[in-house]
Image 1 (tube, rainbow, N blue to C red):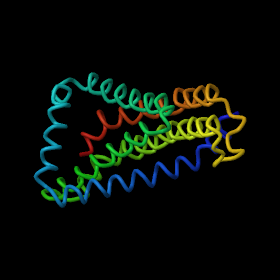
Image 2: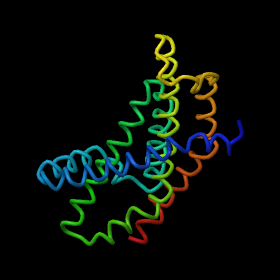
Image 3: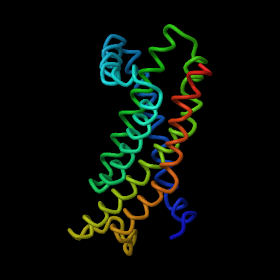
Length: 199
C-alpha cells in the first residue's frame, strides 16, 4: 500500500480522533470552569513535572519536547493493539489538559495571547497527534475484529478480513517515521526557538 492509499485508509479514524479531541478539550474547559481550584491543582502538578526542563537550555528543551512527543505517538501506535484504548486515552488526557489551560489562562489574560503561544507549533503538532492516534485506533479496531472473529461473533462481517495485523503495524510505523517524526521535529523547533520570540 502506498502512502496516499494508506492515508486514505486512515480518514475515518482521523475524523474520529479529531472530534474526540475537540470533545476532550471542551470537557476539560467546562470541568475547570465547574471546579477552578481542582484545575489549578492539576496545573501545579504539570508544572512540577516539567520544572527541570523549564530551566534547561534551548537545545535540551528541543530534544525533550521532540523525544517526548515522538515517544508518546510511537507508544500510541504500538499499544493500539490493546483494542485502541491507549491512543484514545492519549487524546483524552491531552485534550483535557488543553481545555484546563485555556480556562485558567483566559481568567487573567486575553485568549489571543494563548493562541499566540500555542498556534505556531500547534498547527503542526496537534494534527500529527491526531494522525498518530488514528493509526493506533485503526490497529485497535483490527485487533477487535480478529478477537470477535475468533469467538465467532461476526458483527463486522467481511471487514478487515484479509488485513494482516503485523503488516498494519508495520505500515503505521513506517508512516510515523517517514512523515510524523519530521513534522514533530519542525513543531519542536517552532515551539522552543520561534514561539518565545513571537510571544
